[in-house]
Image 1: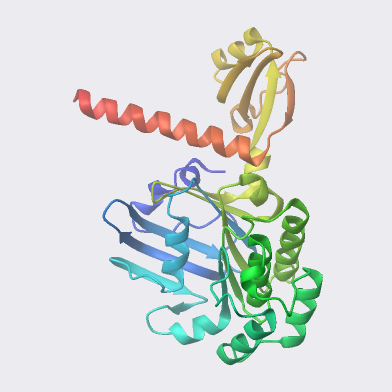
Image 2 (image 1 turned 120 degrees about the horizontal axis):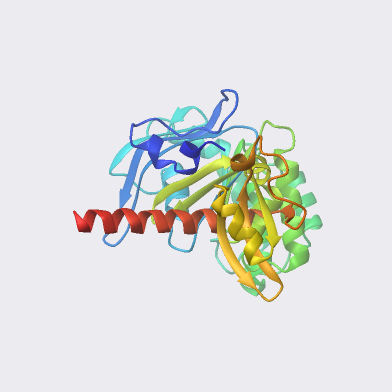
Length: 327
């Protein structure tokens, strides 16, 4: 991962939409200088180009701006500035076509509690000309969604599953999912994740899925976008992140000696059984044997990588603020 892609704002400052490394792709979503401000929160400026035919994880703590970003992509909230293109079309000029070709889930389903799943399907048939009742029936059976019970009697998890079944049944090209796994038990979570994988498997469909739980995004995402305080601070291919960083374990002396040798380590912490740190493999390229036999190297989880990078960025920001105050 290039340093400029870790700190996305280095590219946003010059007005270019940040793109993942690799060959040029067609874009499912493009944000150019997009801002949306409320009284106590501001999203942006966002410069981002999300590729078609894959699953993009949108991560960030609660309140980071994930829901606002998804709603701007659908034209559900107005923006102060910038341009958004969805499936190649300007959302201000092609709203109807975009709604036809996209599916969206925002937590629990927003339908009258007296509706049944069958009532919901009839409504969606009227809204979406490509709604597939047979596909909806298959998904309902797979997810064990009762057809005759009223939605108000559903558990929170079943309401989410109904919303996802509906979104997957009208042949959408782009699926936008805002925290869709909230309220699901472990078995249901895996079932929904598998449905999302199947949806994107042909590389003709795109999914943007938000979650504050990185372990879920680790299981499913091809790319990761990280928001913090309304800004994009990380955008990279997931496998590139996992390849670049590794966990190292050893004695305090072993780990400290690596830092003295200009090895980039993040998130160093001491414990009862030794010292742990996140290793940037780029800093040991061409320096074979530097780690020594007493330092153990293991794969790092996506959560470990992102948490360490975020803490490093926070430390850097504090340093910049302190420097500015001193001046």
